[in-house]
Length: 131
Image 1 (tube, rainbow, N blue to C red):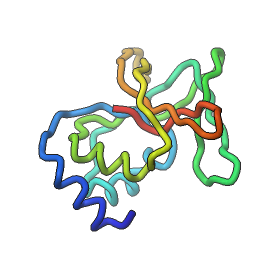
Image 2: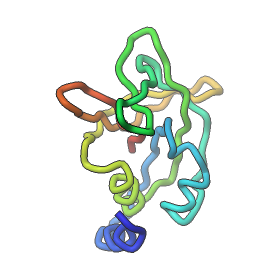
Image 3: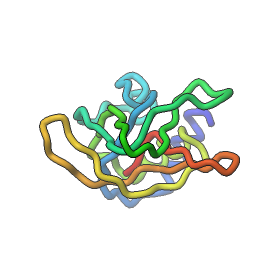
Image 4: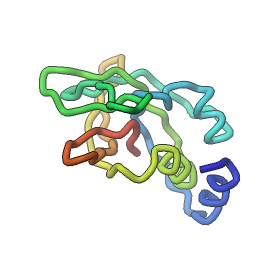
């Protein structure tokens, strides 16, 4: 989807709740967020316990899968508006649904947020972000 289409999609959703998002792939890069959101949201290092980062056959991006004894390092980005969530949804595409998870911040605090769980050929893959 091109940037004009993404901007049009965001403009049709005027309600602006704020979300906190766990990211573990390309959305960890400030440059990617700046291109998508036209700003760099506040972020903090975080860990998602009970999941493992994995490669996806035929794709350049990672996925995460539930594995009890593993953890995934990533970031939380905060202050994400509804309209920005639509942009992030369009960036990630249609193969995912959101679930609620708890992540640990690097200084010990735990917070609950949503993470998106993907479905590809019957297997469950966790999406890169949640809200």
